[in-house]
Image (cartoon, rainbow, N blue to C red):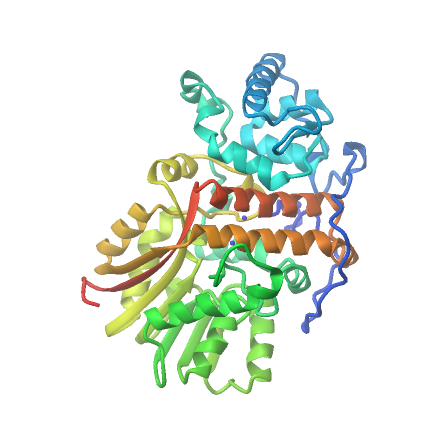
Length: 441
């Protein structure tokens, strides 16, 4: 799953130097979900420069934003009086709220939440309503002027070999303990597949195993299979594949993930079956009976999708199978997103882009791969994200103790709710795909 801004010294914004990672995660203390209050005057400008300060005043754009946003929120019922049915959005500082949106669009909308300028008692509900009507929020003629406020993607976020390492570190190396604070004991950071919906946090580990088993089955992983995993995470898929008797090589660019994955593999007594390599997918070696990559393509960047699928094809042994799990969006939405800098790109997943099913099909076919199976279950990702968000908010004291400030916590909550809304509105989906050479099963 998007990127914290970094300081001039390269450290992730909001992450103090004293924040340490324990190699052996423990369940954090549970408490009630209380959104941390933030005053702009108290925000650390060195960590959060674009949150601490308002953009320069542009009265005309602020006025237009105020008119359009106010009209949209009213029409969608998000500013209904207290006690009315449905989610509500409460703006504490209208001038700042409209100024940020007028200057920076959706990035400004997210930064305004980080700055505490608006709130909601049902954040995912508000964001789901907005995502469901995203094409109606701005009048069609004004959408043609998108370039006036939408910034281009920063060149520094490109996923060159050096850029990919930096982008991975800015998210996955924040702290293993941070991820432990909201993930289930499998430490799986991708959608689970539940036996039924809705569900509970206690069901999440089995849902993750169900997801992993489906991917392993798609790739026909069993005794003696030579498996390459692109994107280790914290090692759960590699552990489960090795328990089937597979020989696993798993690649990651995250030092923190690699260290904990190796500890978990050693604790399971599977060191002889699993090798964790700090290696770029473009440098993968050998030929493998099966290749599995879970929610990795989103971090590759459109510029490198050709290289990604070429690497998958190159390392696949004759008759081998590739199983992928990928978040997807509509093709038109993907093209619009690809052209602009987004809040997710700025604060959560730098350099990433969610592909469309069409983009996956075209790039895989160009590499000589055919799609044999394609199954979606976006509603399961919405539930996964809900459980992560509720767990995160319940464990705020543990997150605070790690050194993550209130702005970071609001950012992370917004990220989880924003993602959940994408799936609940069906703007996003998640697919499990089986690829083989040509079209042979």
